[in-house]
Amino acid sequence: MKPGIMNVLCATMMAAVLATGCSHPKSLVYKGTDHLKFLGIAQGRVNVAATVHIFNPNNFGLTLKKWIWMWL
Image 1: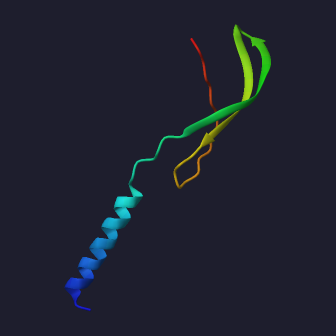
Image 2: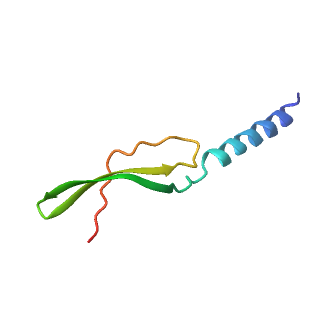
Image 3: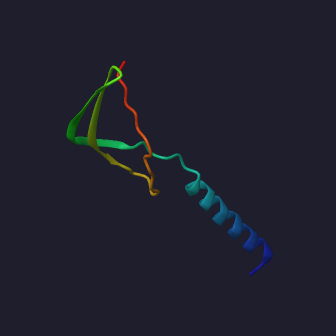
């Protein structure tokens, strides 16, 4: 192959990788809640536990370490 064609091919491949790899992540989709459980009242707060089902449309995983949902 000629050097000019090789440069164009490499530049095209790099542009394709950058265009697909740098896309913005899609929002998570809330699917529902199960097993709502009352844990008690402490320090003026009502504590509950629940199983929340969320769909991740992205092609990478995620880990939810802590989630606090407070109503004011």
